[in-house]
Length: 378
Ligand code: KQY
Image (cartoon, rainbow, N blue to C red; front, side, top):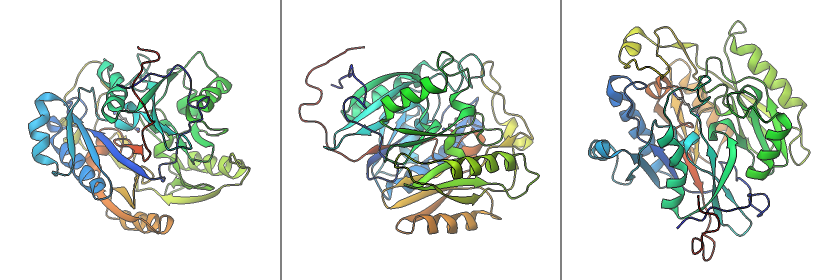
């Protein structure tokens, strides 16, 4: 049994490791809802299966799928991928899965954030989201990891850490009153210190233009290693993304990390502006309460939305004009990892990308006696 701890990770000596630290494995969810994924989610399922297969080259992968979709998913996924039945509302494991923390002894525990579908009734993307809200707990049960239930509405895609005490977030997302209106900047920083075990929070301004999550950091910038941040950079100054990336560039250069270091910032050129076609939009079922998909809508495409696996980088491919350059850049940034590209337009049409659909479980060993005794049942 998974214990729900009455304390906080920081108090217990736990902190979130960086994504580039070793993993025990990776989790995804199966895309199913026809009001977010076109053509009853079939093209997205093919793309997710390719992502799962690519990550499975580097580390164990588990996919959560609803009961009616189990057989079809099993047929599309490689045998090496473990498939488990798990109810969910949509397929964004980064945001609905646990954020894992570790201590010096290698014990892994999970933070289970409150989830409100990126804004609840004030701009959230769908209703209801009660199945998504239970995903993190279920993953922790299956992984036999103890759990911290955080009081904060938060998504895994809204934060990055360097594993040495620094977190990277955006104001657009974390200070949006549709997440934690009772908390200001200081209150949110204090919760991040408690639940991620960080000492320094670096605030960027806005996220990627038209990112429906409300400015997730995982589409804008990420740590490549401690002291080095990779930032999405548009091709044209006239692009509305330009002032946003420029502002992030300036803030990153003005910042110090938890160890007092200045940051090196590396630009990762974005694909040219991409939009949803009329045919793509027409394939999505309209449903009251779910964000509509409209032809001509700009897609929040960013190569920063890659997944760091053990020994690999699984990156999205968007456009033949820019993919190769982005892959070469990532290869340079991660010289000891193999860069694998996966065609990701179908994931992008659903509002996110490879980083958003994955969640790593850090390597570690379970605490001796973990799960023998419940401390605070919920
Ligand atoms: O960016 C993410 N972490 C998730 C994207 C969610 C989009 C929902 N339609």
